Image (cartoon, rainbow over all chains, first blue to last red; front, side, top):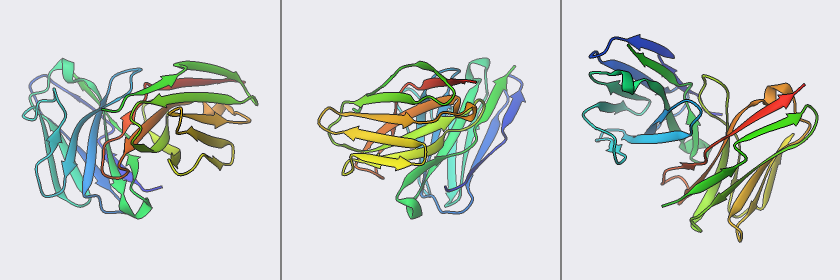
Length: 116
Length: 113
């Protein structure tokens, strides 16, 4: 399958700081990437769709000023959690479609964010 | 919008036996159904998928069946091994490649040695 690389895998930060998470498609170009949030023992919740060269599309209830998404190239999307608070602690996962593999969706390894 | 239900939420199977996980979907326009395996602390891994023009697909010990009329699809794992222990998610999508995946609630599969 296609490789989606996500960094960092784990981050601990103080309340009020900002955290940036990177998502890269290593062996294919991704015009669209997706960002998910997952709480323990729960399913994946789509936060936003990241579109290369344009603004991200956010799901209902997701604060766009809180979760900044930048998709500056065909292989990189970033999610910045601004002014993080303990309630933002969660597992964040990115994904990307590989057009060369019939549009299948591949996921990164996830980032565990802990806000103290 | 699409709604995907998944059962059971937990499943324990003796090593070597088969495991079956079932999902139903609501949108008759859905035409793509992937299954993902997620190990603790990792991202989901695509293990098998099926499109609506196919009724069954098999890849070694893993198979997926689709019943479009009843709007349900199932994951079958045969000859289970301890490394099959994980959380499995089904998903559905309409207009394949241009829409968002809707995920099921997940099944925690435990293989008992």
